[in-house]
Length: 175
Image (cartoon, rainbow, N blue to C red; front, side, top):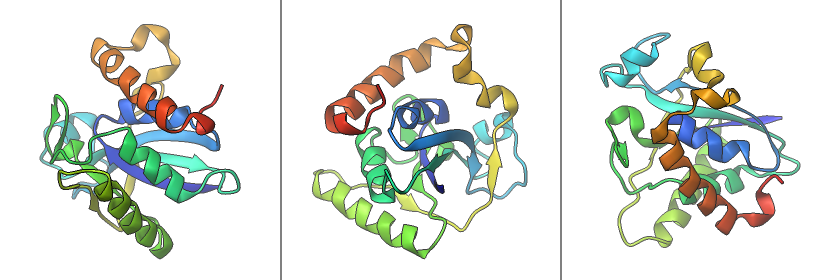
């Protein structure tokens, strides 16, 4: 198994996309890229810690390449919005890639170039790190496991992201 870390707005909205990808074994919500050790959700939401809401994807590199994950990442969020995704505003919602080694860093640079070639507006996604990963609190990890816990914001934001995934990567989506 291999891992990848992406920040593209609300971690629940990003998590929902990657949970549907063939070859993805697990997705964990968390925080990365800031200055405070072991931050809480409330601290990250304040925008004062420097952390981004992010996801850590565990995937099978035999069935899914890191480059494929990057392409999915760029299609399912707006990498041209600086420090925001839709109504989520602040550096904690920035578009960022956190490579775990030099190969991922090179792939991330190539992924940004591919994304930029498909857009007129500048891609503002940053490549950051190395940085320490902090898992979000347990209640965030269980968010999508309980039907009654879904909120209206996520229910409005996630379906269009899933439609983009299914339209652009139909052969990569779980049944």
